Length: 375
Image (cartoon, rainbow, N blue to C red):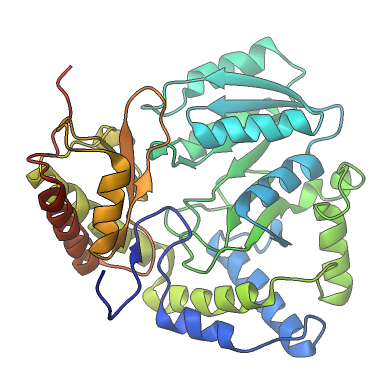
């Protein structure tokens, strides 16, 4: 591994952060101090601006990984006698279904292929056939394979049918366009350590103002009750329980850089350039993406594993790490794959270096080509 820098994380989060973001964590903060209260308020304001939700939504931060906030959103938004429909085309959809079931909410799953977006026709049919469904859960960018799901179309159907929509936008917020003025959602969840390029440890949930009152008393959890978190924060400016102070101030700095870069459109352009650089370079080495480009979000790319008998993921991972890059294991069960992220505080130069590191790893292991096995 190069000695002059940390390994670059080509993962869907945690991800490589800028020096400015790292330096923001060097100061200790009092969680009730007025300076930290001001940071929290600024972060919430900036997050609302990203989705143009100042008029329609509030944002509620929560300690923990993104999954904590998904669980909190379902528990807080869906009544205990509600019925959740999960649109499943990947591992994180299955996680959403599992947590909904564990919280005692009636849960129905419609399964789709991992290699394609969910079907809005199937959604419409399901809602027409079962009027007891109260809420739909959608993963916007399902990073199990990297599929981009049709958020606008799903939101339109839910609005037409009078159903609540809970969106896991963990791997899309900040990069892909999400506009609360045209996309109706009851809750939308993301986290600090994804496309906003902060560090992990804090999630946040956008809640539609019109449903806030109906969230009271839904959650069976003290720590993860978003209604209580929101009302306490509105009253005091503080978190109910000890916040991840260093994570919050790192996100505050990352949001400053987000705005300076040019916001969502500029970040998407950088990630698209990263994606194109990666796919072009990997193709030259024989590697084949799992998804057709029409279904692929420029967030994380799943590649078929090489057919070369010298390949095993563990050895390949270790070899790439020695050359300064951290890859990500595959999440699919039917075929062997690995994943490479395009997000973080990196650009096309780093992606070119990543491809070179893969080429060096192949040489180290005696892998002649990245081409997958023929069907």
